[in-house]
Structure formats: structure tokens, C-alpha cells
Length: 138
Image 1 (cartoon, rainbow, N blue to C red):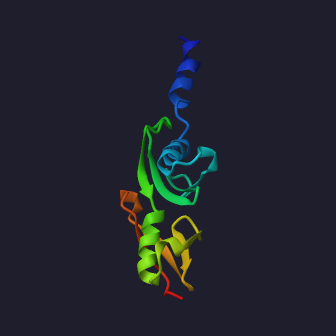
Image 2: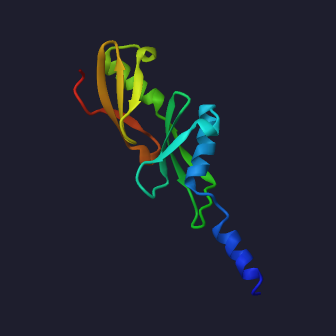
Image 3: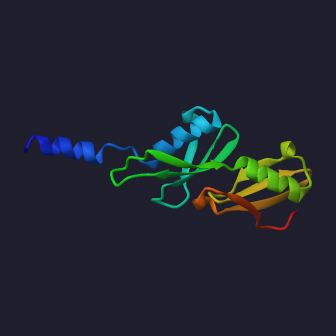
């Protein structure tokens, strides 16, 4: 029994690599991007929610994990299309003409057609992100 205890602890507590790894794997598939090209930033320290950036795309993902750090399920969505669609309407500019700058994990600046605005993500915890303009169009 004494020899089995360390092995049991390794299996129970070392079985998962955490949400960040699971999120990067999932995002790489969805973004059609090499995992090594993705940067996953926690939305809040210690959370299982991440903003993932890479290959000219941005996504918001949440790892559903058990108490041992195993995260068999990842939920989320690409937010680049959401940001582009909202900004194209607000700035009266074609989506292809817009550039996105990440200001922090929840705020993004979009520029195009000689105008710019910043947007904040809301309702992402429920997997249904929306982009809301949080500045006046300039």
C-alpha cells in the first residue's frame, strides 16, 4: 500500500494539464492555427476563461475542468467576426478594412475608414459574446 500511494497521488493530481493547455488545443483546431502560434491570456488571474490570440484571430474560451485539473470540455467562440461585424456597422466601414488592436482581455480597438472606436466584450461567460462600443466613434 505504501508503494501505491505515491502512484495514486500522481494519477489523481497530475492527470490534467489545466485549462490553458486544453483551451489552446481547442482554439488551434477552431482557428486552423498551429498551437505554438497562439497566446492564451487568462481573463482574470486563476480563472479558466481565456482570450486566445493568433493567426489574425481572437477567441474567448472557457475550460470546464474537474478538481484534478483535467479539462475534458472547452466552450467558447471566435470573437473576431463579432467585433468586425459590430464595428463595420458603427464605423460605416467594410469588415475587410478594419484592423483590431487588443487593449486588454475584454477591450479591443478597431480602426478603419479614417475612424476608430473601442469595444468591450459582454456575456462571454455564457458563451454568447457580444461587442459593445464603449467610446464615441472618433
